[in-house]
Every structure is written in structure tokens, then in C-alpha cells.
Image (tube, rainbow, N blue to C red; front, top):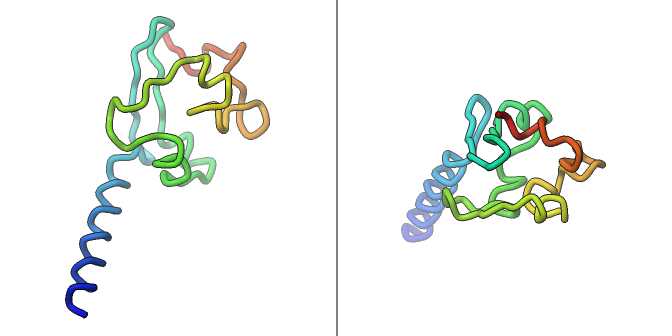
Length: 102
């Protein structure tokens, strides 16, 4: 019984640490690109009612630098393109300035 309680507590700590690494409301993360930096704003997504675990780890890995996104992938419906598909959220093709800032 004691082992189960310890295992449950350890799992809770791991889950909280994983959520702490996601970009939550009030936080941002930036990627430099050849077209200008892309800034992901936690506020924009949380304001739409999205939770961190909707994308992490289903779409994005939790380790910084582990996801190498390319526009072709996003336009093909991978990574950001899973939601930014023109149905759930704006489609990136033709809307470059919405994400890429000089």
C-alpha cells in the first residue's frame, strides 16, 4: 500500500513538472526563422480555452529543441497545422505575417 502511495506521488510530481515546461498563459517562446522570429504566446492559446496537454505531448514533445518544424510540415497538417488548418484556426499559407515578425 505504501509503495502505491509513493508511486502515485512520484507520478504527480512528474506530471506537474511536465506541465511547468509547457508555455502557459503569460509566457512566450520564440523561434528564429529566415522569415523573422515566430513567437508562441501562451495567452493567445489559453484565451481560446486550450489546455497545455491538448498539444503536449500529443503533437509536440516536451524537450526543448526536439521538434524541428518546417512550413511544409505545418501546411501538411502537422505541428501547428493540426489546428491552424483554416477550420479550427487561421491557415498559415498566405498569412505569413501573423506568425513571422521581422
